[in-house]
View: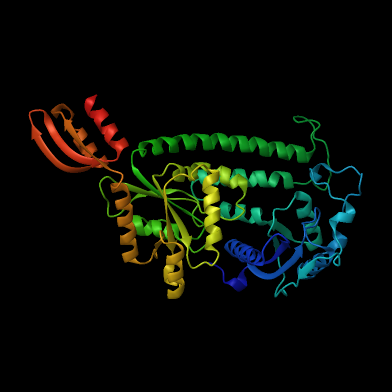
Length: 460
């Protein structure tokens, strides 16, 4: 049983609005970060934000905002943060961060305009920052606040970790987590104590990082084996008519998948509820079959390691005959979400795959707003995955799309190869079937590649 909101641990959101970011973009990003934190199981009890020209190398926020944040979390504030003096030797865990004391904690009155903090209602246990933090930024904020700090990538990776179900998804997420954790590791209280025996001369930190590299190599080897099996399965579906559902997380892909295929796929009103690709036939079935695949959702600032890790999952989009770009029409930010979808697909090389835009959840859109959408996106399919009539209409659109790709053809299947007749029915639309002394004469329509393949099988 899920916890009530009041029973959840508390979190504080932190954001820096750069001068180059529009106010509406900042608000949308903060709202999305709040949804991510909720998905992680936390209640957002306070926010601290500041408008700045750039992000500080050492602490992200200015000194005044750091004090506000420390008051909410009960931390030591800027006084609890220690910075390297210019020219001193940095410890191994400082990595490539080159912060200097005067730049690390800018003054509260250095020309920046800060937004007031929302007052906390209970003691927080987590601070979440809407930026990717360097290791030193993260450690300094933890010293300032006295509690755990996660950046945006850390939150997304943790959500992926909790939602991964298949073996491959769990392996992929573990690689992303290890790549995220490795540079953020620090020395234990004993400092850089040298180890004896194997790995002599290594500090504990160096040894731990080497273990992580070895573990990542093991995981990649295991994933390679799984991906070879998947490639074999995809090869068997190569001549099938394939539709892939793609889009922003929580756009309704799994709900649409369930409605189109009648499958019992996992559906939840949460970000990244689906991480595993599901492939099912369009229901009721048509001949030739149309396969529909659900894919992992996209999100703004999706960590690069996760995009790379889920490359095999996204290959379903790359190898599809048609993509359905799904967007939540009731979300005022869906236009920018569509841009994220397009850019992510371009990153994996799927930008040239034919697509249709589906504006989902129009049942939540006012009539006047729906008319605006129809004028702005005349080629889009406006629908609700909960409306049977809309599902039937979309199903027919998919059938018509593939039927339009078919060309006429004829095959004569000798009696010695009558087993091929059933395969013809699987991959073509047979219009007539007659028999004479030569065998079965089939008049049909099929996609050019499928027709060529069937002709080669008959002529062998």
